[in-house]
Length: 140
Image (cartoon, rainbow, N blue to C red):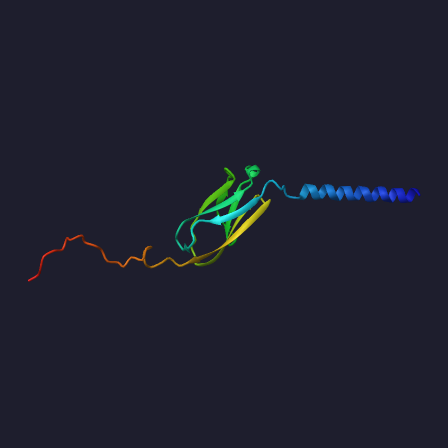
């Protein structure tokens, strides 16, 4: 009977040790990147956009690192008011995975499609100018 009690005690001790280790390794639920967004609806090479990570208010002690397809964008950013923001200017067209990571605790990603810079100015300009009546009169 003593052997069974010893085994039960050992099993309980091992279970407690594993449970304690799990709690110590698990990320804190209060420190999370909840989402990441990129300003604008259409994205072009060479144009600056604001990338914003929404994080829980209690995680202000942990900086947020932003990456573009795995390449770091600037330096880690402090959290203020539940947000961390950085300016991002894409240099290549195509698919870009923008990731916000908070000190290895949590991360979120958003995929943005970037197009080559437009050749015509925004608003569909024709390239002609209104000279406002500067050229009047007749030739002849």
